[in-house]
Image 1 (tube, rainbow, N blue to C red):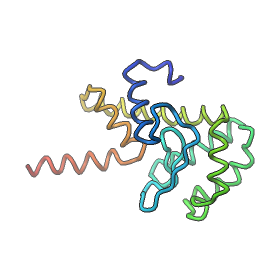
Image 2: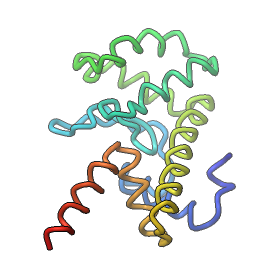
Image 3: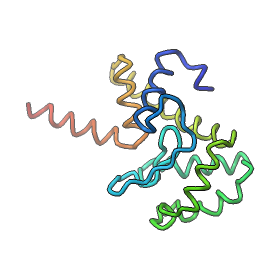
Image 4: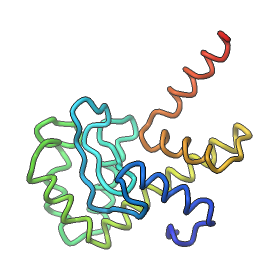
Length: 165
């Protein structure tokens, strides 16, 4: 499914998430971010798929690109072993960052990024339905925390805190 085919409220959620992650209200496919102290490690793309989360979306996205035989699949494939073990040298490599930025204009990579983003949007919607939450703003918050792999942890802490008050 294409992002453009989503209902308006879900397109708005994707746009807001993209604004939070990249500073732009549209999907920025070539965004590469590595901030000192950020537990997500290297992140990439419009939904800033993170390397150092339990879901390891960055590796899954790159594997999808290779499986779909993107034009630079062999180059991407050569980085996968180091990224699978979350190697700090690979994460900070200027060569890898340059490759990822260049891949931002590749249609196969755009599809891989959309696949990650839409998969996690679907997961966020499922979590909302399970909990009886219906507001679009709630969808945005859940979506953001699902993408970064922290939803379940945050929910546990909040529920524990609610029991104390």
